[in-house]
Image (tube, rainbow, N blue to C red; front, side, top):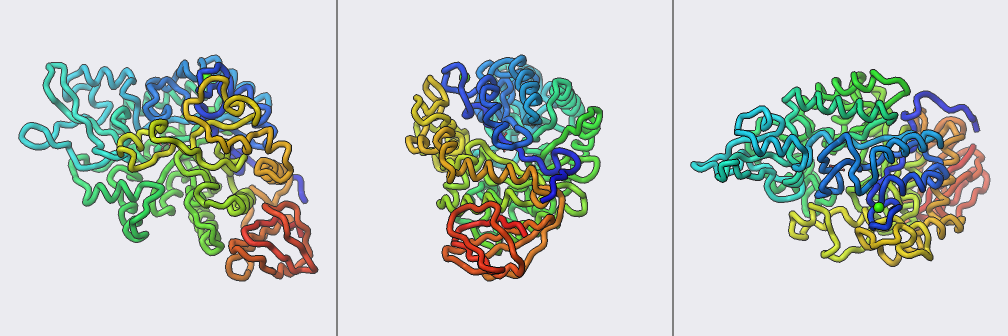
Length: 545
Ligand code: GLC
Ligand code: CA
């Protein structure tokens, strides 16, 4: 094993996503907060991660978990104060952790001062021009300007009452009606975001995760989409009931996502980032199709990373996994950006629940942990947490509310973390948690898993520990694929690293044509005789040549 590590930190960083509301509550109001994150920094550092990404904690009426920002340059009192945010940055830095904040440029909250001004101003005014306000169609303007749907169901348009008390213009909101879309054709919007970026860069943040990065530029607002309801379904992570071909055709050309204009915007952002020293970075959330378009966001002079959502959706199938890895690496090769990998985030079912099989989730994790580039881990993923079970009355996601419960929404992945098995609310809060925890979370608590060598937590700790030392993990190096029986993933990397994964349910023998030892495994029962590795079903092995 070689001990030399490489270049710029973010190119193969392990980045842990904190969803502040559900991480750790410090003041018993049942809502996680920044002092709670500071309290748990030793835990985070002990995982062997390189950086934290915090979902929004800015001033918000909380209609969409804080992705409805009323002031991007201040902290919501629920989460603490600006001083707490500054302390978090410096405390994390003291522990050698970088800090990435979320920015939400597609929309503001309707509580933002700009939107309040727009409502009080006349149609056609400068205040309205910061958003997408249009007259409706029909003889009384009663029909929305186009037929687009909100991603959270229902129309993407809401009609306002003008100051004279009459029904008036409509405004666009791709998400909840409390999240009016910003008009990025207006230079004032860009200037304001530059101010926000500098505000946090001046306070020491190391990077930004860009929410709905693909949404800022829109096609002609006056054109209808051919089938807006089907497009809404296609955009859901769970777009069941639709053929793959239909889904792909709908996602390939969306009037409000992945328009060419977004790239001019990110070239401007990049100039701001480059004003600062210290290898600051940006990562785009861009849920688009085909994935080859993702490379456009990370061309030289644009952003640094783009999320790859493949593993949030992938089947536990060797051929699918191999196809995905090859494609993702290939698509990014020409632009020189590192790939990213993630099994979970705050918008998707947790991997254990999605696959419905803990062994498979462990084995998939060990594949992701071994790949080149950067790895994102969502809080609780390291515990193997399943989705929380919630009664309809507890659900708060606008996607649930706007669909009248047809779309269960994302609350299941946002249930607060269990820290200590024997404490009230498993140590998350001494008050009443904002989403009730599932009783079964007890056995997933950090203290329980800490004490269990075979736990998910210790699986992750071992992976991340090895990643820090071994040049065959993370990094930029290529992957070499080897022939293997059906259902087996078999590749090697530099410094003698070999990965074998068995996606079938049955023990399989694989000839790896070399002697090797097991350095890490997702489950027990493997053994090696000469160059023959016997690998149990639903298992991944890391081998050292
Ligand atoms: C992103 C966020 C999601 C949010 C949406 C609207 O997809 O990850 O949580 O609801 O943007 O801001
Ligand atoms: Ca709190």
